[in-house]
Length: 368
Image 1 (spheres, rainbow, N blue to C red):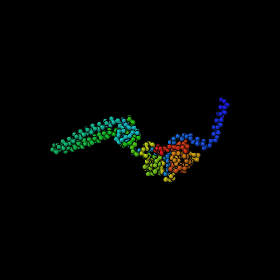
Image 2 (tube, one colour):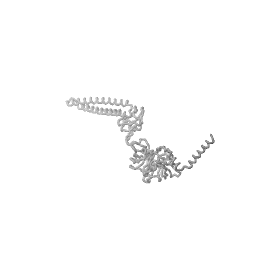
Image 3 (cartoon, rainbow, N blue to C red):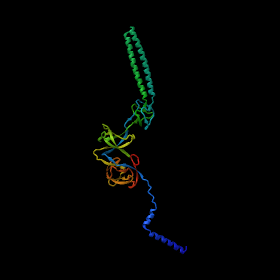
Image 4 (tube, rainbow, N blue to C red):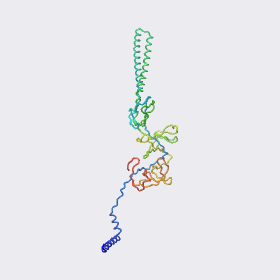
């Protein structure tokens, strides 16, 4: 490269540097505005939210089991050996539907023998009736003695009694033979099966448990627990908490000093599910409650934090709360929240304040 060419390049570079040095900040800003900035394309993350709950002076929590209001436990009315079982737990059944059968061979033999005895007794009764009629006719004609007539009447009376006894035995044998087939007594769902083919069963032993219509929550409470029919309560399971009332209270304590109480529960509750139960306690003040898993404990034992939705309904913010009594799945909030707030049910330690979320109602599974 010649000296003249090198000098020309150096001069051009100096001119460019002088131009940038002389450029105004406004002109540089104008240049920067011409470059588009990519927006944040990160979609809001779904978050389960629940409303702050108002507890009407709730007492300690107990655990109850869902049962059907209308239930049946059909069993065979006669002894025998199970031959067939036609339904399983979970099957829907209708009134009169066959559930199981016993081996009816011995019962059928007894029925046939009783039927034969009845036929024999009827034939003897008919013969005695004819003999009595002949004796009565002879007596009327003066061709027989009064003693013979009396004997014929006694024989007829004995034959009538024998026939009645044989007929009764035939009816009982028929009844037992028919009871070898077990049928459903209510519409519902088979909740339990206690018999299997080849098993010997005794009369009156429940063979099935059938859950009919309606649902209730059965719970055992300490005998000293104050409870009355109509008393308000709260029943809850993960993701759902609803108001309930006491339907029935046992008048006596069981052997363990516990009292059985039945409470209302939604009709779609599954039989066998367990729900937490809290009865209202007039001696306790009204307080706010939140699910225990929504709370992050802080250093102070009565302090914690939760993530709640801000006024825009999609941005989360951290709220420090004062905590009261802890229950089985909830904790009382003494300050820091209102009954209008909605809080993130889980993940409060992983979601940063200011994060935009897509609220999902934890109880309904619906996006709000």
